[in-house]
Image (cartoon, rainbow, N blue to C red; front, top):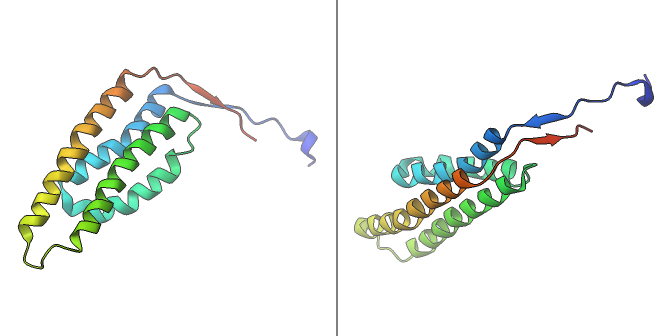
Length: 130
């Protein structure tokens, strides 16, 4: 079959609700992993995949909100990893302090972002298939 005899691919529609949900996922993950730090190793791996999928979403706002949530998470995580080099082996209270600091930074900021995403106007997107 030649290219000219192939039927044209139908464009697909990405619903506004789906785009909004995609923009919220990283923030929800940040909140959950901050509240339940045992999930941190899983979230580090999952967040990288999620970032790769959503950063170049057809709706640019999804990429923007994902990038902002990733900056928060990786920034705080990087700060804690760097500071952990100086925490004594028996300094569990320092780790609890770092966790509290992470919660103070990540949770409210993620909630504010979730509210921004909810208030933002979202429209269906038509994606042309190649």
